[in-house]
Amino acid sequence: MAKKPVTTRSGRFFKLAGMTASVAGQFAGQKARSFFSSENDEGARSESYSRMASRITDTLGEMKGAAMKVGQIASQTQDFLPREFSDALQKLQKEAPPMPFEVIRQQIETALGKPVHELYEYLQEAPYAAASIGQVHRARMHDGTDIIVKVQYPGVDESCDSDLKQLRLALKLGGLLKMPKESVDQLFGEIRERLHEELDYDNEARNLDVFREFHRNDPWVVIPAVVRSHSTRHVMTLELEEGDHVGDITPERYDQDTINLIGHRIFTAMADQLFRFQYIHGDPHAGNFAYRPDGTIVMYDFGCVKKLKPEIVRAYRNAVTAALEQDYKALDQYLIDLGARVESQPAIDEAYYAMWRDILVVPFESEQPYDFGEARLHKDVAAKTSTVFKYLDSFKPPVESIFIDRMIAGHYWMMKRLGVQAAFGNELRAYLAEFAD
Image (spheres, rainbow, N blue to C red):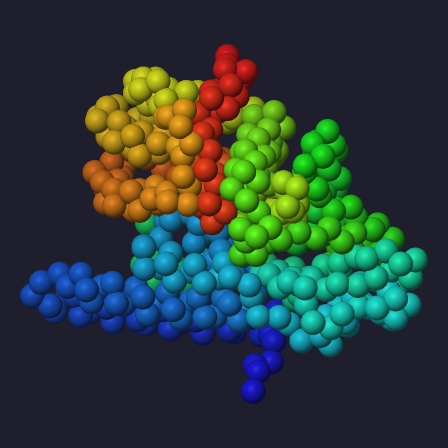
């Protein structure tokens, strides 16, 4: 029997409080066992982390809303959580189980003030897609226009702040946070701000208009138009723009040249948004993009966008340039400008920078196409993660640029899943040169 969805603020609070108590108890037990053990049992610690991660992940997946969204962000941003927890959170990136249709129908009718049959010619009961804060249903307007209706789950908006507080408490009591309190405050403050924007569909409608205008001269970028008469803060109606999701890209419909073309267009859209627009699509997971056999890219879900400060973009651009040129003294200073390096700490050994540079610039080094399908950058990065402990006091995750890193990581995984084979070095250097100081 399916569990009844949690849609009230008090219900969400008690559900998360129960999770927090369970995680705190497991952590206390693990600490006690390590205290009485004659040696530091790394295997037991890892097993304890895995149990806590499973408890938290199961609860977040059931809860939906802000807590689940933070879990998705955490699975992509591994700077502040143990590997076992980040690995467990990966399943939150997959499509969430849908909310019952009667809950969705009531939410639509409450938001738009009319019965569903008056609003739409038809509304499909089976969801087109389900995600962390809402789900999407196909429908048709009475004038025959095919549309989708994006419906926010009840209770997630007003419970956002309390959800975040409970989740942060669970991570703290579970001994899972690996960042100083100041950085945690900044990170959760940034996440809270982005979530409040994402929970406001009026705000997302404005974002859609802004990005449609920015890409107006890019016919290969398709962004759905908003049907304003049927959109509110909690329900948004969009014209239907279909495409193939990454799992449906088959050799029968997409040859390698088309896949490579899509890869170049993904790179161009990302670089244009970062360097020219300084306004980025902040949730670049596979479910928010679709493709067409003519090389068109369809972009969905503009609830999470980030307006970047010009000085942050400048520092980011300068840091990338210095890394490519192997000027590690300059790189150190630009990372300080970016907020990634603690200025009061001594300069970093150039060999440390060289190690990371040699891993991360591989796709941009050669004029020969790089095979993203065979890429192992993520494995090479994971293999060197332990080296960060030597310089733990020298670096802090720069909150201002965390969404840039998230965007780049998301696009890397899309390129890998698509199997793109392309050389981006010259394109990257052209952007860096165009925006040089």
